[in-house]
Length: 268
Ligand SMILES: NC(=O)c1ccc[n+]([C@@H]2O[C@H](COP(=O)([O-])OP(=O)(O)OC[C@H]3O[C@@H](n4cnc5c(N)ncnc54)[C@H](OP(=O)(O)O)[C@@H]3O)[C@@H](O)[C@H]2O)c1
Image (tube, rainbow, N blue to C red; front, top):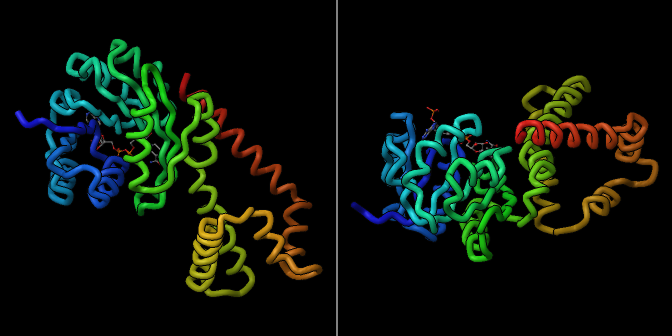
C-alpha cells in the first residue's frame, strides 16, 4: 500500500481549489495525496485534471498522517463515524466544514488526532481566497503552521481563536456574496441611468476588482482611500451622503450580525 502524506475526504469544489494551490506551489506532489469521494464524476475529474489518486472508500485517506475533511457539514457526522476507526491517534485532522466545531469533530473521531479548523472562502477558486485557521483539541504550533502553509497556496491566511469562527464566517465566508450583491445593485442603477447592461456590468465589475486590488496592493486604510476619491462637494460626496442618510453602514452591520447568528445556530 502506498504511503500518502495527505488524505482528503470529499473531493468537491473547495478540495479541488486547495489541491490546485498546493500542486502549483509544489509544497506536496500529487503522488503524496489520496482523495476519497462518493461521486464517480468527482473522482474522474480530480484524478484526470490533477493526477491525484481518487478512491470511493475513505479508509486509506483517513489513515494518512494528515487528513483534510472537505465534505458538507450535514454529512460530517456520518463521515466521522465511518472513518473514526481508521484515523491514527497522532494524525493532524484539518476540517473546512462551515459551522462544525472542533469539539464535534473530536467527539465524532473518539478523541483521536490533533484537530484544526479552517474557514476558507470561494475566491480561493482563483487563488485569491482568505482563510482563517483555528487550533482545536491537541493541535500544536506546528499543526497550525502546516495548515497555514497549505492554505497560503490559494490565498491569504489569518490565525484566530475558534470562538471567532462565527464572526469570520459572517465577514469573509459569506463576504464574497456581499460584494456580488453590491455589484448587482450598481449594474441595475447604471442601467436605470441609461447605460447598456453589458457596459454597466463591465464598469461595476472592474471597479470592484480595481478597488479590491488598490486596497490589497497599497495596504492603505479603506477610509483613507475613500477620502481620496471624495472631492468636497463632488459626486462621490453626494453618493456617500445619500448612503449615510439611508444608514447603509448600519444595515451592513446588521447583515453581518445576522450571518454570525446563523453560523452560531448551525453550529449548535
Ligand atoms: N463554498 C464555500 O464558500 C465554503 C467556504 C468555507 C467552507 N466551505 C466548506 O467546504 C466544505 C466543502 O464544500 P464544497 O463546496 O467543496 O462542497 P462539494 O463541492 O459538495 O464537495 C463535497 C464532496 O464530498 C462528497 N461526499 C459526500 N459524502 C461523502 C463521503 N461520505 N465521503 C467522501 N466524499 C463525500 C460530495 O459528493 P456528492 O456531491 O455526490 O454528495 C462532494 O463531491 C463544506 O463543508 C463547506 O461548509 C465552503
